[in-house]
Length: 387
Image (cartoon, rainbow, N blue to C red):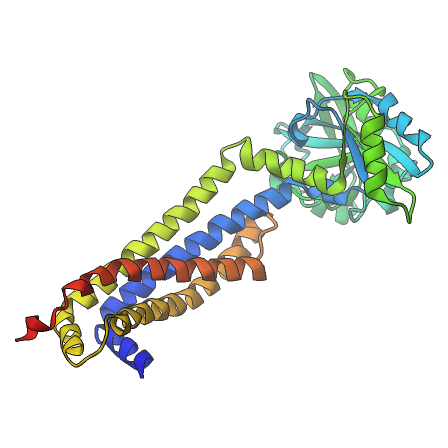
């Protein structure tokens, strides 16, 4: 009986109800987009980390993120082999180079370059294993087919069987290089495109680099060992001029940089907060107006013996109805926006059950806060007002 009463009071002014629902929809879509893009950016930042076939990783303590890696001596990585529980180690080199668009011939753009030891399967990304032999040839590379279009129509031309030869340079040292295959990694915060090549080819482009100094040291453990125990022993054994991280720690290291050391986390969280404020304000205005217009009726109910608790529950029910009816189209619009955002930005943005539930909880929260604020007006619903 209570719910129909709350609904009838809302539906009595359909235009006002539509405005309230529009406020919830608008707020829900904003929150979905802010959280979706934020999480997608964080996930894109660890594409490489997730693709690495390692159990632990060595990095320099001076490294802050993948876009700002500091080199350290390869000797530290080789020292790890003194542990029988370690199956193999593999050096990884990373850096930025200038890529010349082979279509326009004069458009240079920063591209992320990864150099690996071809003797070991360091990556599990699609397209690498089947092309390792081709990478043994001088000045050859694999091109990330998920790179942005600004690098040229590389994927389409390669799949058509065209020979793709262009230039890649670093510090004025330009080298002709041939794309001999495609792999899948994906764009990220600091990279619009990626190349993967053997580390000798990497060093031919980055001539100011030495093979004795690496950026990431991949460590793979023997199967069926106590990984946490081995990690503790390695951390105790290695000098402080290197940092050893588990794979999850390596992923968290990257995400934490973008979340706390840049303005990105703050900006998107601020967007969520503003979305909440908009929803609270709109719903508050609607509920407050409803209460004010029906103050005499509320006073009559009090005179009939209804307690304040009943009247408060009536307003809260209206807030809940608005939240549920507004969330559903907001959720659907969020799904549509995710689809187009992923299509045109290549960000790994998708709706997850956890996010859907979380945003629904926020929607209920904003409506209940608005309702709790609006019911202050009920304190003036004195039965004497109707006489």
